[in-house]
Length: 352
Image (tube, rainbow, N blue to C red):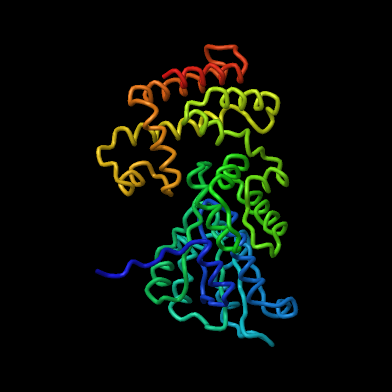
């Protein structure tokens, strides 16, 4: 069996760039702009010193760039440096130059056939996938560069926890599961803020050899380690009514960071997975991970415990309660305060 090729990710590219394993051409495309901007900046900062940039860095912008001019720049040799860097930003705005050019970015096909080894070309295409198939096919066929899709990050705690773990690994900082859950819930898919907070926590740790903990997050970011949606989910999982209502009281006193929609969304995702576990005949870990889309066995164990505490019919009822609460929280069929709705929802869940 052929060896499975490791997929190109933001973190794998960061590691290669920091190790100075450069590619002649980088195509960075997709709906998530954060990764595209960070990678293009990292390439420039790693390849060239401040002094070298005056003569060896050229940046084009798609709204007024001509592809032939970009290619001509790529064919120039570096001055007083090992490499020359050419960056085409906002490549999705490159204008088509005539009726015969369906996509001018395909003109890079001919450069991809024989790129200049001393030049590093970075193409940043935001807002969606690049459609220049002839160019990307030539790139892959000639192995003259890499194509990385920066897919939009969903505001889903399961995906976000994987991203947080990957980022912490890339900066050599340990983090526990509860800390990842707290950050994913509180910050969501704002990657700039999420990674900024992780950088701040990393600096605070210094060379202590310690990892990021809920206590560190609570002290320096202001997220309560005891009163958050993750803890509410945990209380419902174990049917701990006292803890659940105490958390709701805290939410009501701190409404700014504890709005109803994300709470409902997280609980809906959790109990949907509980229902999947209940309905899946094969209870092996691998099968359940694939069936639920959960990334780690630790997260799965929480769902499995809830599956022991709630029947299949209870899960069905709970999902209906969550949908009803979501509708009522938007003012349809109810004038109740959001936290009163949440208390009613929790009562129904605990008595399912």
